[in-house]
Length: 378
Image (cartoon, rainbow, N blue to C red; front, side, top):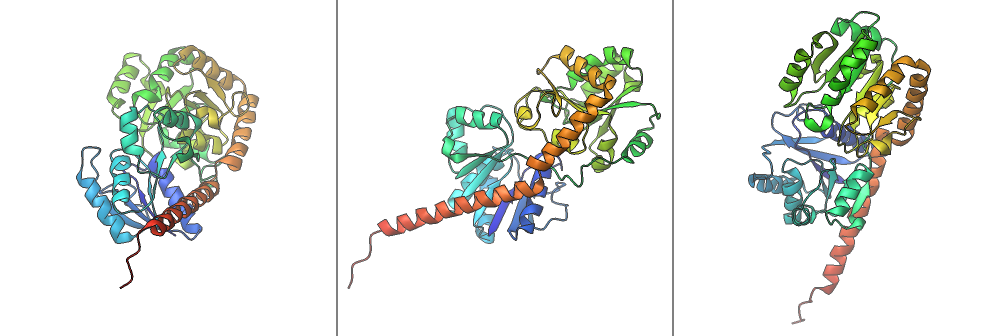
């Protein structure tokens, strides 16, 4: 089977990292893969078991993407096109597959609303739309997508790459120049409004008064970075907050956190939460979007209402003062990830999806051929 993937993300986190994992899993299942991604993207530079085609991809207004995608589809002649992202890929990727008469599926990673007319136009060419969580599935149904075209397949994490590692603590402290008695709270998310960094910063003065050794490490980049740095400085919290950017060595650092806090106000699923759970870390997260599909309050994490800074602070304080609870939650979270969110399960679910879509496409072609008028005999 030949699958052509389209991923428009430029950085290797979130969706792009999931595409990398999926392509590797599919290759192990003997699937032949090709990948369209932006020129100069981090994904394009990865050693992947796929034929990589770097292209210009410039969003919904880039009509040229339609022609470029169609040309690659016709050259590669895949059995199916799998579009993984927005930024114009979801719009023009599906349209290009339709022009080339190749079935297509789309992975939807966000739970934002779409106007019905726009959703009908954008999603109409896809045989299936993969929702990462119930929240995304509900959003798709609300904008008019037929439930029969929606399938839920959650994200995955490499449980051998993200795993408990005692030596990570010393590596983390050394890398950031922290003392041995530091209390390290990790926040792993893009620096954008919906990720809720302001919530953790709002709780920090009170947390510091109770726990002066606390250090918050913010991993990620985004348009809010300058504003968040200014807020930290204005509150006199410079000694307690570090902005670490994107780190290729995050799997070697994350197991050294004391806990991970994820205060997002909207979340499709939350790959950082999967990674932290796979490392058996204690987690405090806002119960937003797909988070509740992954984590269960008091069993695998402490969940709080979104945008509730007081509840967030109370949950963080609870975990900082109850090591046994943190270890119990972390162990249960690791087991849940191994059971439900492995890369192997991700690959198997997609192979099944692709086979279903191929069967349906063959059946449609057979039906059309059977109803075509036959030429009269001479």
